[in-house]
Amino acid sequence: MKIFIAAGLAAGSLLLTGCTPRIEVAAPKEPITINMNVKIEHEIHIKVDKDVESLLKSRSDLF
Image 1 (tube, rainbow, N blue to C red):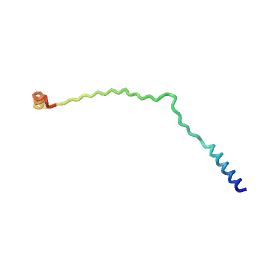
Image 2: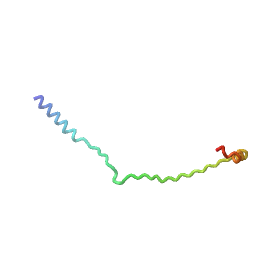
Image 3: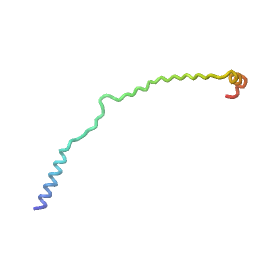
Image 4: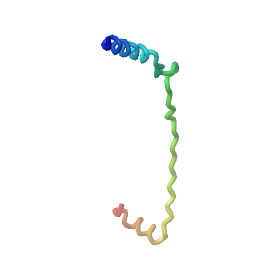
């Protein structure tokens, strides 16, 4: 008799666990787009002393 009660409780608990809410993860209907249009501009200004400028003109092999 105790086996039937234990089996009934086990079956009842299995049936109740089937009623738990379900969570679904779904993909969006529209595709994900990433805009990679980037414009990068650089300006480098170098101020040089006249002595260094004349050295660079006379010895162009430094750089």
